[in-house]
Image (cartoon, rainbow over all chains, first blue to last red; front, side, top):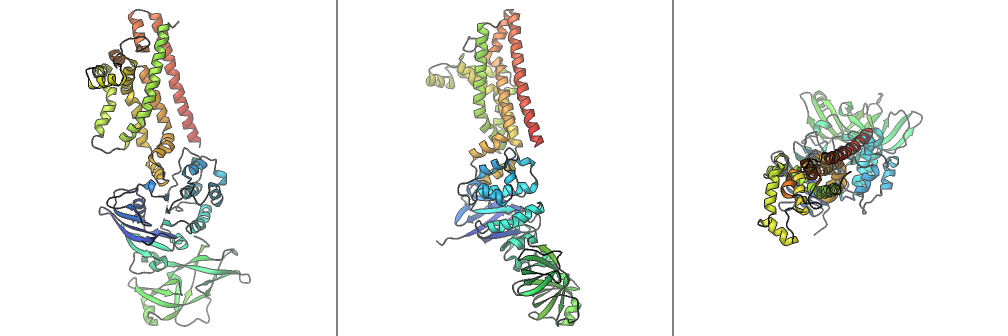
Length: 353
Length: 228
């Protein structure tokens, strides 16, 4: 049998939930959906904390659950970071970490304390710590158990900027060694971290795939998020001293971004609202607009009586433009047509969300 | 001054209470855990059985124990076969009776502590890969330690105060079954009021000191937790 590196499951609970999917167990797979859609219920079922689910879970060829077997949570070798840190109150930081420490762990307590900046908190009672400090320690604790799979349930949802800035790149790097299932309802976290996503809607899995692709699929419930705009990755950043603007590339095309001060980062994410994109069939020669991207119309979708949503391909990345039905008809736009997309405004998500 | 008989009764009482508490602290946690978690239909029956000594007159309990200790009963006969000695009017019999009699005083504080223990921490323990045993020693026990202290103290104090059951099954053998409460009763019966006073006041002071110590420790701990 071929070594199968995937998480395969089919789990049902009464009429409430029905989750079926196969997810590769590499990198970061986001679990995305609205509040109450069933994201947390799904991971609780996957790790065996809710025995009311029937069906099967197979991780890398190991059966965790089927009709005859139910491997207990403690024997599944899963690291779990809950939404709230849940540190043991009777122990200090070091005590919490020591208790979890497995000799096979990729990281030592010391190295995690350094990476996640809590070296000076090791002898502190956990109750005295801030939410962000606790969550960093909780993440370290889960990693120390040497998990085969790490599950994180909105770990950053209530954290301070310092903790978020520290954790996001760390999680991204960590995923090269440990596969991660990452629950979030933040589009920014999703686009920054995940290579795949499970879209959860009303108690079942609506779709699985590349976030960039799923977000522009008009058949999915996601489209209501996307209507407002998509995120673009900007690369090869360069600070234009003369004009005091940031210059960068989106799929090889130059864009200018207004920023108060130079940045050291090489990449950043910007959000382009669909209402801030102007479509033209000829290039403007006399206008103040700076950002013009060559693009191709991929999709034309009517989203209201008066409005149309265009999906535009920039190469690898996509852009959405909201125009009126009147404009569409006047300009006679067709799928496959090459157009110029002028961007009126962008909001900076930052080098990381 | 306390007579030699008094001192021997005091020693016997403390030995009985210590051993009883020790046994109870071993058997009660799993029982209390089961009572706190089980959803089986016969749980209320077991729960009632454990609580019975709270409501039953000690003499009733003593009477049934006396019957079961007799060599004619299965249990009594089995014990004699096992050890060669009868249970009635022996220290071993007294110990078994005390364990049953003080059981609810140890089980109930533990059970309520286990019920109130935040399940989130147990979930964390299982995701950290802890076995049930490790979870108990590293998480449940330290988090419910105050209840263990209270349970132990109540079990100990209650055994010291035991009278009715001892009267029924222990008899009054000095050094073997003659405990404090019985000795005190003897003093009063024989109008030795001075001795009775001395014994009573010692017991009173001891009990008060024990309770102040325990509640003091718990208060300090509470304060420490609040400060942090």
